Amino acid sequence: MRTFSTILLSGLVVLAGCTTTSAPVTEVTRFHLGQPIPSDAITVVGGPGMNGASLEFRTYAGTMETALADAGFRPAANDGRTAYLGVLSITQESRAGVPKPSPFRIGIGGSTGGYSGGVGGGVSVPVGGTRTGDVRINTVSLQIKRRSDNSMVWEGKAVREVPADAAGASLGAAVPELTKALLANFPGVSGQTVKVK
Image (cartoon, rainbow, N blue to C red; front, side, top):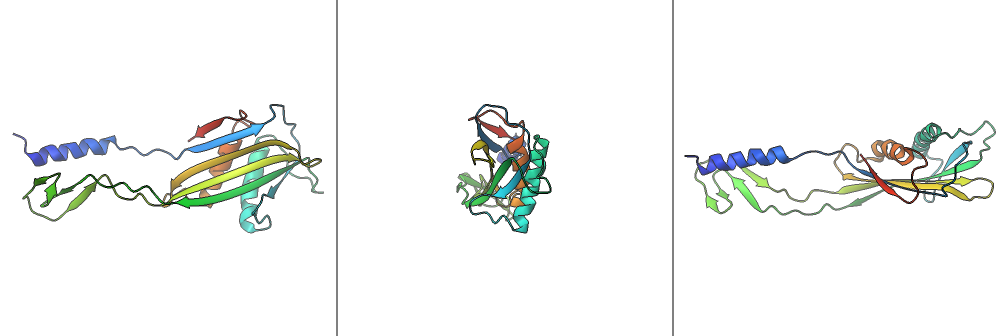
């Protein structure tokens, strides 16, 4: 006859097998006029609130310029004149994680879901978890405008939420991936939000 402890441990093994880790999802939204965008030279500049002269921004701008080149645009010529301006904005926001109270605790030598155990020892493992911690919301936005009249020809935004302690939470790690997702299959379907892993 199987004991309660054996049944309980079997259940934990099943639960452990059900947990999976999934890659963060990036939500990408793009808008354009539905007309072909002629390939031409483009200069990436800082959007509102961005310090376009900072080393950090120039690093992100270089990442965007590489992705724009892959999409068919050319870098600025030696005289700096270009047909387009790429207005780049990068933000990071934080929010508190959602508290998830544990429904019960498994304790060796403690109470187990209302049952009293007497096995001995002092290990207590919560089932369900507690507060998940802060979440980082990283966003890369780009507007492509004609330099001649400042009219918009394309704009898009890529957003990803990740746990604050995840490897990809920092802007340095997130911006290259968000940029790649933003310009994938350029110009993309206007007005549609797609999820990219």
